[in-house]
Image (cartoon, rainbow, N blue to C red; front, side):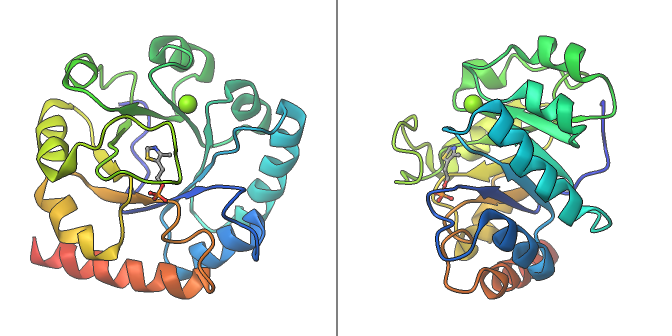
Length: 215
Ligand code: TZP
Ligand code: MG
């Protein structure tokens, strides 16, 4: 494993369209106060320069919190920012190439939507997988078909590294997520765009911790 110092249990993925009343920076800091364990900057329409400027703000604000910042897709931004990691999908830069460019010590995450993708993973290259979408979600209109908790369990069992459930995931799903073999919940709308992102995260964190103790 290239990097083992991260906690997938409550993974916030930022979405600029949902962060309206609270900026991405405000949402991030509120979520960290509430108990988010990992943050991903996902911004599909930003240029690399815009991405880097936003990422720099986040990196500065998050310094000292112990919560890693993961960059979605944009490896040039991840490298320029010296971010803690990168998350890629099946259609992005190949994982082996991404690992080569990032070097060891950075977190590399990969989205997995099928058994074929799950069965073809090297834990020396990929640190964690995002598995889903568990449910259909309007946050990602072009998502692949929902796999449900059965699919999550099937794909988790095939992946030789920890997985995080994504797609329509809310607090009440925590127990099913852990029972399906995933190690955490990755959420966008359950935090971004909530009237009080800190409170929303805090409630999620409590539900997750309770579920982890029951499992
Ligand atoms: N990848 C698969 S589903 C999804 C992503 C980025 C969006 C999840 O958003 P939400 O609001 O938590 O359903
Ligand atoms: Mg991608």
